[in-house]
Structure formats: structure tokens, C-alpha cells
Length: 233
Ligand code: BJW
Image (tube, rainbow, N blue to C red; front, top):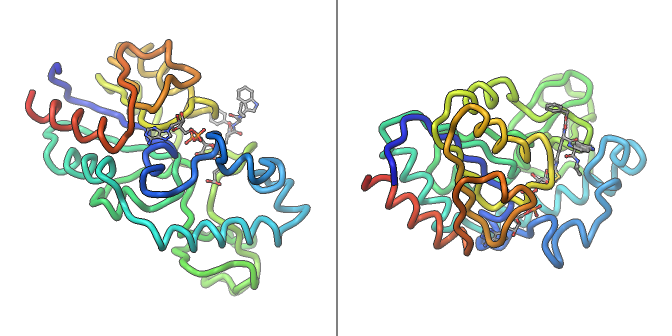
């Protein structure tokens, strides 16, 4: 594998699948069990906050019962040992990258273990249920919501991500279906700036034809092998 100085990695639900976390769009995935409009839009939250808070409480609780897999720990090794610039962007709201040893993770769709107060708009670390309407630790209003990015909302830190995409010489997408924008457009953005592009996924994503290289299989096998190759180059 060639030498690279600036790498951007995008991860999706597929990287956490082998840890036991449901993906969204696979058979039996979260969107077969729940309607997107009900649980992943601001309108759904306004209509039925109990349903939405319960959905995220259950996922936060489930997260405490699983751990990182070899794909997460391999990326942590890359973060430690790669001598160039690396930006790890995840669409995932779980904390498995961090628990796998990564210290710099950009959660563009927010985090399960964070609360956003709709009154004072402050984000606070959060590891408890929200269904009982706890008080915001900053303004005390009982107006916390999950600090996640729903459809129609702006993902976090887009400026920083697009700057990194414009400067990277390698863009790698791991375990994402390419069904959700703006993340699905990152490959074209990086390619447009001359980067090499690599997809690591169980199967071709919706945008697979935009990648210059692809490897298909389980993230827990593909990612450690790719990190090995990159660090040996
Ligand atoms: C494995 C594996 C294994 C399995 N190993 N791999 C029309 C056209 C274009 C865009 C739009 C449009 N209409 C509306 C939009 C915009 C909209 C959008 O994209 N809609 C689409 C449905 C078309 N997007 C938005 O609204 C976003 N905001 C926005 O656009 O703001 C305006 C803006 C403008 C300009 C610049 C910037 C912004 C917000 C999107 C928010 C998405 N939120 C969610 C929920 C977050 C909280 C939560 O977790 O509940 O984010 S939806 C859900 O999908 C979640 C995920 O992060 C996201 C992506 O899913 P992901 O990770 O790809 O999972 P899956 O399940 O789809 O795929 C898993 C993959 O893994 C599969 O490929 C498997 O094969 C693979 N896999 N096992 C390796 N073991």
C-alpha cells in the first residue's frame, strides 16, 4: 500500500455489528423494528417524546453490555502508530471507538452518552435514562433530549470534516451503507480533491462505484489486516 500523509476514515454501524449492536438497514436492523419518522426526526420527538426517549434509553442500556471488537482496536492502533494526520469521523453514536482506545473521535451524528438541553442548548455528558425527564445539569430545566442528529438536522463539525476531506490523500469508509447524506457524499468530495478512496464493508454500499478500491468482508477481519498493511508500508 502506498505512503499517505493525511487520512480521513469514516465509520458506520457495520463496524460495531460484530460487537452486537444492531445496524440500521440490515435485515432485522433498527429501521425494521421502528419507523424512522417516529424515532429519528425532530417531528417524531415532538409528537411522542416518551417513545423516542425510551428508544434511546434502551440503546444506551444495551451499549453498557457490549464491548469494542478488533476493528475498533485496530483503528486505535492506527491512531497511536500512524505518523501522519488522521481524522476518524464516525456516524455511530456508540462509544466503542473510545473504549477500543481511540482518543480523537469526531461523532458527526452525536453520542448516546451525551444529553442536549433544548432550553439552554448545552451538551452534557450523560449516562442515565432520560424517560423520567431529569433536570439539565446546567440550567435545571427538565428539557433534555438525546444528543444525536436526526433527519433534517445539521450533523456536527461539518466545516472541520470538509476541510480534512479537501486535504486528505486517502479516504476510507468502513461499515456504512452510503444511504445517508452528507456522509454518503464524502467519498466524492475526497475524490474530487485527488484522494485515493477505499471501501471496507460487508457488501458493496450504495456509492461503491465511487471508490477506487474496495474489500468486502467483516470489519473485524478487514480492518486489522488493512491497518497492518498500512503501518508496514
Ligand atoms: C458490516 C458488517 C460487518 C454490517 N462488517 N460491515 C434526498 C437526497 C439527499 C439527501 C437527502 C434527501 N432527503 C433528505 C436528505 C438528507 C438526509 C438524508 O440523507 N436522507 C436520506 C434518507 C436520503 N440527511 C439528513 O437529514 C442529515 N442532515 C442534513 O443533511 O443536514 C443538511 C446538510 C446540508 C449540507 C451539508 C450538511 C448538512 C442528518 C442525517 C442524520 C442521520 N441520523 C441517523 C440517526 C442518528 C442517531 C441514532 O443512531 O439513532 O444516523 S439515521 C442512521 O443512519 C444513523 C446512522 O449514523 C446513519 C447511517 O447508517 P449506517 O451507519 O450507514 O448504517 P446502515 O445500517 O445503513 O449500514 C450498515 C452497513 O454496514 C451496511 O452496508 C452493511 O453491509 C455493513 N455491515 N455488518 C462490515 N460485520
